[in-house]
Image (cartoon, rainbow, N blue to C red; front, top):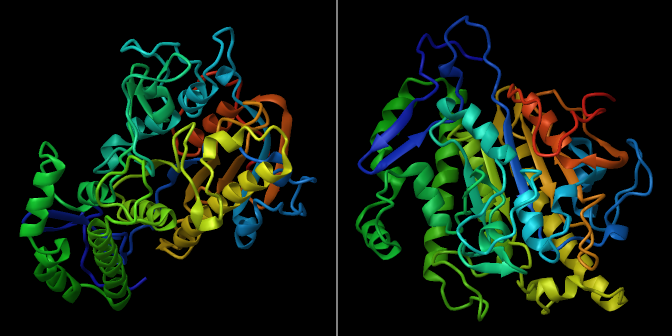
Length: 447
């Protein structure tokens, strides 16, 4: 650390007309000769719909020497930063006498552990999700309490699955039992929520016209950034330059995507401004999360690769069949192969997120060192709609509170919500119970 004698407040912003950009953690934000402040812990969830091919997911052995399966192979370079967790269940996603609707229950139960009320009307009822519990506890520490992102347009009214409201299928985040937090699917809106002072009561068209009339967000604060750099040490100047360059590049990618409207998949509801290629779309949303964590705009995020019962096609990997129908594979080898390809493609995109986190410096480590990232879903096998022994990955070290690099198999019937209680504890959020939890998970901190 270089002691310059100058001290910036942690919540310093670069401000301009219509823009407010939070800075990453800098040496200059640490008072001279004061004790080093530990970086905050971040919590994120990535949801994959329609189940996985468990034979190609679950390792055959436990411990540190497990062999990565086909679906997990894209994550090989992160195995020391990663847990594979087996045996975790979502009992409250089962029918429990309510008949069909496994996809709706999976989405609603995933982060709440609560069996949702079966209704297609306005009287929806689920539970408060783990991300929103953390967001509420941290609300006074960041500009945004949380980010809810998605890569597939959705609706929250009407019925979507066997008498269940679309709110259950399309939202995994719940601020209150009757209040889902629908994901934002437009990268432009997310970007300006993070970095621009925008009037979100405007229509998308009006926002687009307003955006066209102003310069780049960074251009608006450029003079302020130059003056700030004069007062920083070399390391901080480099960090600010790297950070602002990342924002500018992302803004340019979003602007290009907004102009590229002709390659969208036919018959798919897509908001304006998203990239044509799914991989570019996912990476852009991951980049936004990295920037949000890096700037400490928020410490909590959720992202849906797709809503439950998604019918997205994946022509880029040679799978032109809609995702949900082929998840009912009826044990046909050719169909199972297609599902396995989709599952592997998803983990390869998750690897991109982990790489971005690992390569982004944060305090004395990286963002990945100071994060807890859960990846998985609430359906095990799409053919049977089972909700036990779910696909679960946990990445990151939680600022040294987690000891990854292992496959841990928990006893049959262990609630997924026990994992969530453990993660909340490591964010200093005390909870006795969440959904159907029975206590915290063992072995996450032990080698």
